[in-house]
Amino acid sequence: MTDSNSELFQLSPEEHQLTQKLQNIINHEIEQAGGVISFARYMELALYYPSLGYYSNPLFKFGARGDFVTAPLISSLFGQLMARQISELFSFGVAHNILEFGAGNGKLACDILIALDSQIEHYYILELSADLALWQRTMIAEKCPEYLSKVVWLENLPVNFNGVMLANEVLDAQPCNLVHINNQEITELGVGYSPNSGYLYRDYQVNSPVIDVARGLKLSYHDYQTEINLSSRGFIHSLAESLEHGAILLIDYGYGESEYYHPQKNRGTLRGFYRQQVLDSVLHYPGICDITASVDWSSIVTTALDSQLEFIGYTTQANFLLNCGLTEQMQQLKSKLSEHEYLQISNQVNKLVSPNEMGESFKVCGFSKNLEQDEWLGFSSGDRSYSL
Image (cartoon, rainbow, N blue to C red):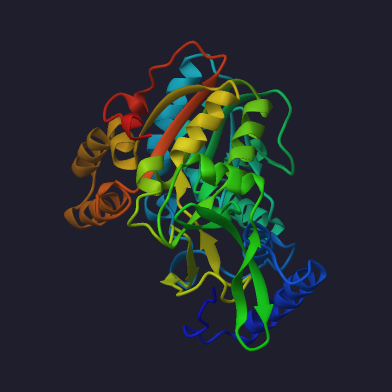
């Protein structure tokens, strides 16, 4: 099974040099491995290799020139409404600490810090990329400098954390494995390299933990390719081990198992982006292109329950924001802003809640540990756990 290199973009000299360096590293690893590596390993190298991977290199990633157009960048209301949910959790007795994973350019952290003000004791950020950590520090120093002393950057998960863990669009960027299903035959796909064709999919393994999981799904489709994400399961288990008392909020795009592995999704959910344009192959330009896969929320919830977390709720981003007071917030703004200003914010909010934008495809999932209260504001209506 090969992947086309037909869709090529004009790279800048800096981009070309960076991806060439990373390709040399990936090619060497493929050669050392006998001609093929797992797709999860390819994705890990492409996204996270020190100083060269997509999330580790210094190239601009935010806004129109980049690939990151996340909810916090669209409107500060996203962070303000998340802060309302977090404030309620504080009132339940959760320690006034927040731990955000992969904080992007720091915009969400700023919005939450400003909204919660003195309620926050510490705002921890676990960031693997030194360049992104610098972006975050600069953003906070410029937009809300009075809170910079509350922010602490971590390199590893803390032990016995008390507070609220928050991950917005983190799960979709965790390296996943690929499988090909042809009736009853399941093969894990890896990545090889050919001087003439570039990177291409190759059969990798016919027996592995990934294939065991795929068999458990009992899919018997013809010529069907999809993802199995063991990394995200490990991530959830690690959060459960780290959290002593408190809550976890996860926001990302994805589906329950039955929709994720629907027969019509015969090429899975894996996508590659370059400057917000969808690539015809995720194997183009490692280090330059973002690679994502939708979240299988059923596996996330199952892993959380197996890890002794309590499942609180699962709903759409639109429902969650409305439950947290979006309508009331907009009514207050209408009385304070000019018609032009209000229209601008309304357009931003529409992107967050419209079914055709982020409102339906993005989900919010909540878990707790050693917390008595199991009825949270954000999940008060519009429950979607039946779809898991």
